[in-house]
Every structure is written in C-alpha cells, then in structure tokens.
Length: 144
View 1 (cartoon, rainbow, N blue to C red):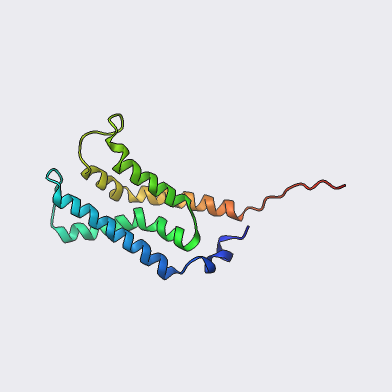
View 2: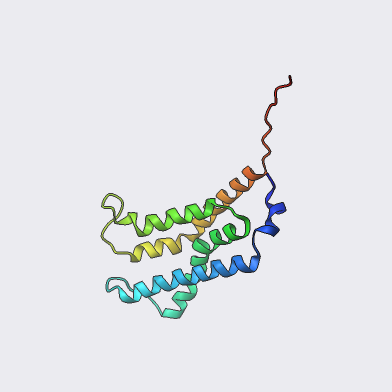
C-alpha cells in the first residue's frame, strides 16, 4: 500500500477540497439559521450576522474538515463519524429513549458547538487510518 504522501497528488486538489467543504459548511449553516428563523420554539439570541459568523467556523469544524480529508486524502473514518453525528443529533434524538421533545434547535447547537470534540475524534480516526495505510503486512511464504 502506498503512503498518504505518495498518493495525495493524484487524489484531489486543495482548491477542490476547500471549495466543497466550504460550500457544505455554508449550506449547513444556512439550514440551521433558516430552521431557526422558521421554527416558533427556536430563537437566535443576539443579532443574526454575528451568529452566522460564529456558526460558520463551527460548521467547518464539524462538516468541512471530514470533507477535506475525504476529497484530498480519501480518508473515510472522519466522514463516517460525521454521518453518525448528524444521524444521531437530527434523527435518533427523536427516539424516546435517547432524546426528548425539545425540538431540533438543541440538535443544531450540539452539532455545531461540540466541533472541538469532533475535531479531536476526526484527528484520531484520520491518524489511525493513516497509520493503517502505512503499515506493511508481511506474510510468511512457505519455502518448498
């Protein structure tokens, strides 16, 4: 197996990776604030534009970083974790055993504002996947 550095030039460009992750982060942040504006039980405290300015870096940390790792290096672990995070906070939270009837506003907040913890998990997963890719597996070939 080739290492990450040897295979990275053929994978994808930085421009494409940053563009895709930036668009995904902006779209998710837009969905968060559109839902917050339309939902009667969810409120945005403070003014709108500073809240969007705070939400965008957190969205990039939660959603953009795994996309960059996927597009640029084909590292799958963080993208899978991101899918589980979004699935849990937006779908499974409505299961009565796991969540409450608090609406989706808290789910948006937990997706965005727990981004530092997700970044740590993404780094561990990406590092583990990188390490597993670099490993060379030696198989014993019987001499006859």
